Length: 119
Image (cartoon, rainbow, N blue to C red; front, side, top):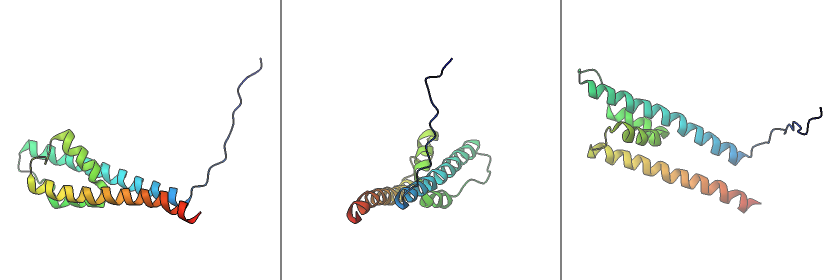
């Protein structure tokens, strides 16, 4: 019996500094996004109980968003229907999200354009 397939082992590909930076930024935002999502879930659960238990202060939720968890917070707001009608909260959240979205666009654009400029 002969086998028609072969196992091909590829050597690891070295990442450029730009690729490594992009992956680190993405990992940073994924981790903080998960933390913010869980915080939103926990706070919604405590709010629904209404037992007077200590909830997560809004400034802490905003701090998680500002650290990079804005997308996880946004998803948590939608999934759990939490903090979506609080105008003051949404005003701060939208500013944080806008800053991160702009930063992400600038980072990606820079990582695409800079190598083209220097090559």
